Length: 332
Ligand code: AHR
Image (cartoon, rainbow, N blue to C red):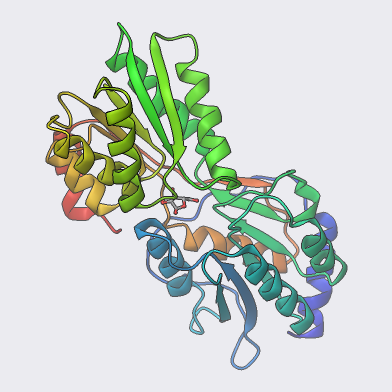
């Protein structure tokens, strides 16, 4: 990176504060008009990523890689975790700091344990942008911004839909993502904010690790343990909800009629299942924020300040008709 850019970057870091920026249009195409490097002076971006985890993650990481291209002025160094292991992420993060990349993008497999790494990046004057996943404790002085849909708000909306569907109450189970992942805590917080005080009764909450296979096996077990007396399933992502639908059917129950299933993500398989009546509610958690991330990186390296949390708009779908209306245009 040119000396001039480094100096501007240092000034930019000093000026980082809370000033909103408009969300760039979220799309899967590469950024246009980006002010990354020129020629061989590309802006180097270390992407500490999650790696293979499911359809949402695949769409998100593909979108980032399709946005931070050489044509846009970037050299993106993609570092997926090894089997979702945080140590492999911390090792990659450390390597990027030692290498002196211009900026680091971090999607954390675990919310805690990042303070030392983030402080090292700060000492090296390397800005860090959180993608999707937050950190706990949330020290906003340690990173430029977090770009994600608002998990608490999304889950609140799922909970509000559930309460509306069951005015006289009902038994439900929650299929959670892995323990220790920030978005799981945020989704529980939002759901509880809507459901606490309603007539809905949680009979079990258990992780199914974002997976369809585990979503099915956990649901099978919980249906048996509760004599099939479950009317609602809140699955914190699509894959677990799709697995739960299989278990509901294999228990001789009808998804959407005997058991309503609500999920978060909005991937194509879930939208197709909503259209078919297998799922009853899908809240999008839009993964296509690559252009917003590129805008944030350019603004940060040019010394402009950005808001400490940039919320990616995401919409809810609550009927087969709503799903059918958008299926043809889904980008993930
Ligand atoms: O952090 C976002 C979550 O991670 C998605 O909801 C889930 O599908 C992914 O694995």
